[in-house]
Image (cartoon, rainbow, N blue to C red; front, side, top):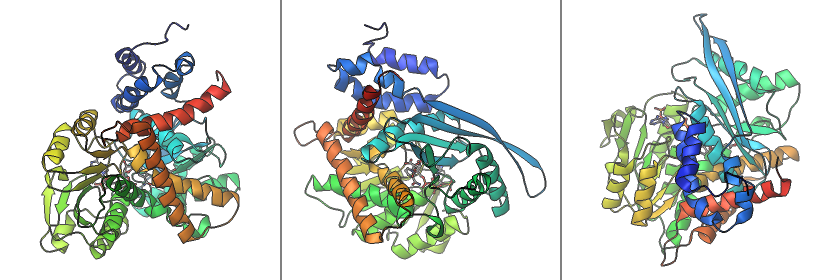
Length: 451
Ligand SMILES: NC(=O)C1=CN([C@@H]2O[C@H](COP(=O)(O)OP(=O)(O)OC[C@H]3O[C@@H](n4cnc5c(N)ncnc54)[C@H](OP(=O)(O)O)[C@@H]3O)[C@@H](O)[C@H]2O)C=CC1
Ligand SMILES: O=C(O)CCC(=O)C(=O)O
């Protein structure tokens, strides 16, 4: 038996912390998964012997590089870019690119680790990766963003490819940035391949990719409510964020008969007791993606709405909550407040928005709680479908893609139930998602031996 076999959970986490100094987000993500996997593998010697969890928690490869670009005043600017290729046991590395000043290696490692389990849950052949840069697109001109994206891809192109690693968007990376990066990849390599997803429809993008993450999160929420014989009709929803995931989650809630009360950004949240209707959502989408404005402006635009500066929306009483902004935006006290106010269900549109204490509060209260790796998997799932369409050089019809997204989200829900049903009507979706995702990746790794 190997010397490091069968260490207990605290010793395992202490080892992860020691090997990854100062990388709190990464350690947090590994701990959340390990808490469930330890139980599951207790009597499964092969996973211990082959050190599977230890290996998934060590990225296959991390590339870090300088991104040098010129701003509109001809100043030379320098940022740092990364691609974390976490695990490709079940398919090419796949996961978004984030441009935000808070990006660090720790943040991208946690995201790539989470992505590995999420992508396995979709049932599609995709490994886990994530990339980005500590670049802030806010306040930059289109030309500055273009020059940054071109410089970023001038290094990244060596490490990606349609069968190697297929990035997409994430915070700060939307249609505009994907266009600039795809254009540069094509220029450098002289190849038109499916190297990125989230592309424009004119050049190989997939219908419904833009909507898929937010819509998928609401489908997952609806699947959870169905286990209690309920649906979204008449339910009030509190949503954080006002970007791609938040606005499309809001749209689907409205379509399914719910009432959305809040949206937010990094400066605060708006509360609209009359409900954020489709027309108002359209205004937010244009405001954030075209005018590149702040959510605070909503309160000036729509009567009856208020803007609460510097706060998150979790104190607003609601039936369901969807954190759709960023990691660690919903803390232990927020979780206690939601439970106290009677919130029945939480579906994470963002990646790891609830901190570990908050996760434990939701689990202890036994409310319906879907972790991001299950609830927000619709986006990467449709990215996987974009890869398939690119491979066969075809574009599938919208109705077909809508049905596939519904089916995939239902399949993920079923996998969570299969591994997370605790009896007595309680499903631990965190446990279910962690185990189902782990098992698929782990069994592929076992097939390869020690590599
Ligand atoms: N896009 C996708 O397909 C997928 C995204 N996700 C996850 O969903 C989340 C949101 O991504 P997406 O909607 O694409 O990104 P966007 O860039 O479109 O929107 C991000 C939103 O989150 C807010 N935000 C960002 N950082 C912070 C912060 N530190 N504190 C408070 N608010 C913040 C932004 O506000 P501001 O404008 O002030 O920065 C903005 O409203 C992320 O966790 C992402 O990883 C998960 C799966 C797929
Ligand atoms: O579509 C993709 O490849 C990535 C989506 C993503 O970054 C995520 O699921 O967090």
